[in-house]
Length: 300
Ligand code: ATP
Ligand code: MG
Image 1 (tube, rainbow, N blue to C red):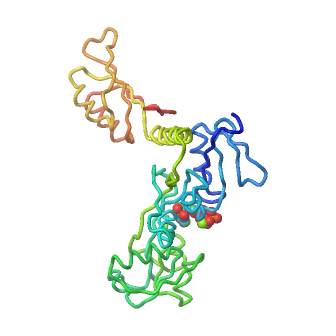
Image 2: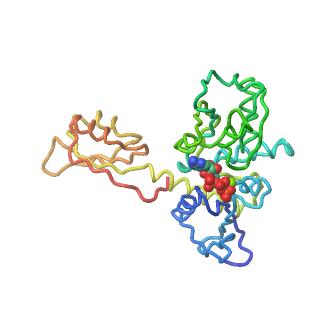
Image 3: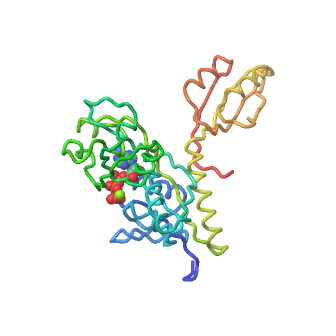
């Protein structure tokens, strides 16, 4: 690597719910970093790809301004910040390259648990507390509701009991925090998970090629996590039925079994989740010696 090697920067959350999984994903994609003391900037050791560790709220802006080329952030934060950026730049855009299957949560409308919910219209003329004013505004508008939005950057769930709001729009994963504050979720504003985002900055061909390679690797890790290699024995005449059951398998490899002319070995790459139900179905279709193996890496 020389001084002039073009480099790519990836922004991830420094410390919080997304940090560990984001770092794991990048490490599984083959990236190694020199973690520096202040831990804000990690230099890429084996590839010209560096890491910026920041607050999750800052990631969309770093991408929009072209400071970083890639970022991992919740779809909730990306959507909110994008709406904010569009106030200034109507053409602001972020590409969601891949949903990453961690950081699952829902942005939900919640009301006091002792109240009936008759639909969004009951919020008309009321006040809704949230840290997501733009997503909330746009959801209220879609539902034809005129309500005042009270922006709070934390402890949103205590607003109703303090009398500052009639309802809240906040992130929910298990609902425990809501219950502890005598609130109940009644409508979903947004379903969210962590995603890999790309800003719109144009890159010179060499950097673009590096970025593409990196994205392919991340997608490969994602795909491998879901993919299983299934091996089984099948009666030759049940092969068609058995191939149908294998989830997400294209063309399985069929191999003869020494001394057993009526049977074959079937090897298949299943790109969709393999559940116990699938194995039970395979067995009742005549399969035996069924093995499910994890796939570590994949490049297709
Ligand atoms: P930062 O200091 O980086 O600003 P934060 O406190 O804003 O951190 P976290 O609480 O770590 O953020 O949450 C980061 C993201 O994790 C959320 O934006 C959301 O996408 C996701 N997430 C998953 N489950 C939950 C949950 N139960 N509550 C809040 N966020 C969740
Ligand atoms: Mg934050």
